[in-house]
Image (cartoon, rainbow, N blue to C red; front, side, top):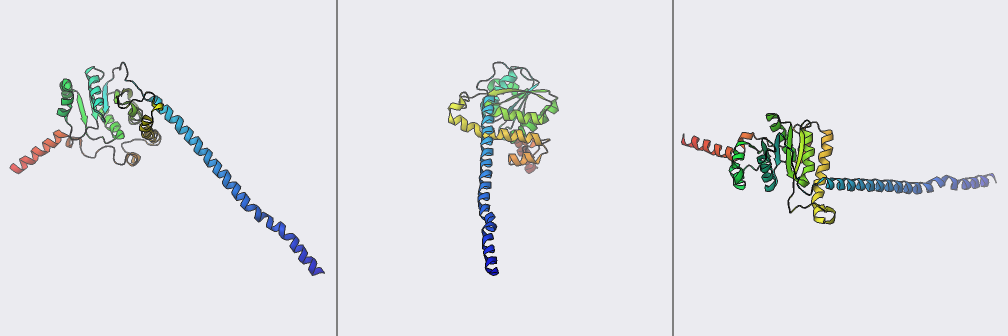
Length: 268
């Protein structure tokens, strides 16, 4: 009898011992559900913040060029469109600055080519315009502009570039030159009309990558001390922002000098 009772007691205890094991899958499922809901909530909040940021970014973009432009010490134009350079030379002719830097010029483009595109400004191009062939991207534009500003002792700059490119350009220039006053002169073209951007998918799609680059520039400026010496600038830009070649070895004039020297060596 005692043995039977012992066996019965053992059987009676079995359900209570196995109960926690049956609860474990339920608890695991509940935890996964909570984690999934939390991740979804974080993703929704992130998407909402990005959307709000995009709206603010788009609102920063001027749909019209300024009616009047204040005078600054100098002018810098970032290449990327013929109208940018034409507007910048026009501002130089209107005495909105004493010198003009055209940053990011193609190595095959010289003053003569620019003069053909802007024949009325040939004298200005000869006396008061500097060409930068070393900048490879917007980070490089800011670095080369800083070198030029320091060389001439300028304290204020009129920054000329396309309206959609202006927010990121100002971030890069302010990061490279925190002590220099920057005045924006956005260039507005007919093929990039940002007015009523929310009604045109083509404009929304065009601004999206620029917004992403703007965010990266903002974040990079918070953790980077100097874009010229930062490894982060190289990683993000995909290459060094400024060409390692000396400035006097770049451009049509330098190429012409190189050919003449080579010719003299063969003749000698």
